[in-house]
Image (cartoon, rainbow, N blue to C red; front, side, top):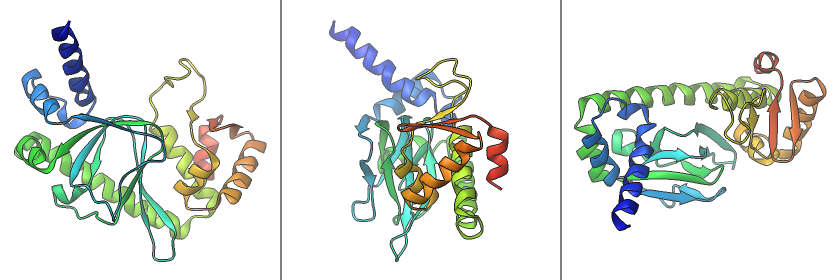
Length: 239
């Protein structure tokens, strides 16, 4: 029985990595070696994975749930720099040549991550030219996303930022929701307070904008859930 349980644990660890693009062409043996070096850890919704006061020199591989990465300005305003979805790497990218000590990472849902130490990142990732090249591409895209978010925070209205955030979350979802297979419209599991934080506004303003979008048939509101009814019009609203 112990062997069967061990095999199941091994398969679970390997599956955590199998969904990650940077590992797409590794052999089974290579995947198993990396999986052993990346134990799984869980966080509850609202928990902070790392912060400027509690930096964590590890690399996270998100298996389940969503993570919000954000910075806080001197006047207390939060700017979301990334919304991490399953199959994506994130963490203190100083490991990979990017200094991001000012960032917070917050679990939006209950999340499961695989965690790699600095030594294992260098041993298994940075020494493999295939993986290192893909990581460089990911960091480049993330930097471009950050520049876009900074631009949005300056030039877009609150309503446009909320629509942009909803559109981004919708695009990041799998084709069918695991909670409601076959559902015709994408659903986003977020409270108004969470969405407000992502869009950089107050909960009250966010609720007002969402009700306006609902009145115009773009979305449908329910407790802790937003259903996107008209993706095209939501894109238009995002500017």
